[in-house]
Length: 203
Ligand code: DGI
Ligand code: FE
Ligand code: FE
Image (cartoon, rainbow, N blue to C red; front, side):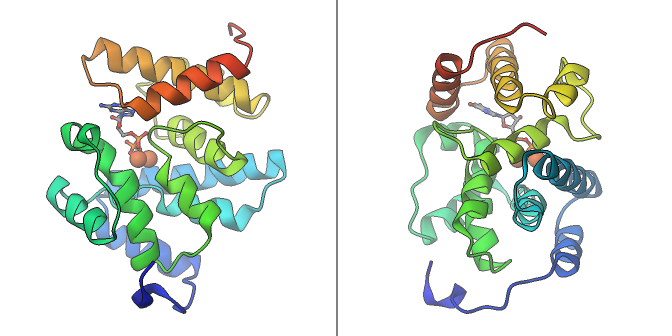
């Protein structure tokens, strides 16, 4: 990033949580805490660094309070691009805006953590273990209730992470299709990739 973000002290979880609580709506903050602890449990299960996982969990929706215009300027000012799909579907913008804010407002430098925030909405081809943990925890955390197959997915998250990922991608594509939303090319690519590399097993 730019010089402004260099050499800033890392923030501890209490500072991060307090700042998030001040910025986000109560429901979103509650979701954030749910994602963080669900992700931490998955990190324990799969042997991944718990602190990194919690950092990514806390910050995955850190830009959710910004308007589309604010997100777009933040992203462009950081030298990143806003795609046509992101402009048409502003709910996608908070992932890239969060990737920027995590660096500028929360002093995160860890590339693995930043990447998990960046891809948490669409996924990507060749996701890392941390990317998968955050993507899945976002979908299954305790406060979620409308998604189909939650009971099965919550179990699968701790028994077969790739199978869980594939099932979530299938449900997401189906939901987007049914609600006539434009499917982002990255979401489609992620689905195409994992439907080839993971064998589909019905619940
Ligand atoms: O931020 P959250 O609500 O916790 O969850 P999220 O970041 O996974 O998703 C935010 C929204 O993005 C959700 O309503 C589904 C939507 N979304 C995910 N992939 C796509 C998408 N919307 C469009 N239009 N296209 C996509 O490919
Ligand atoms: Fe999100
Ligand atoms: Fe989320």
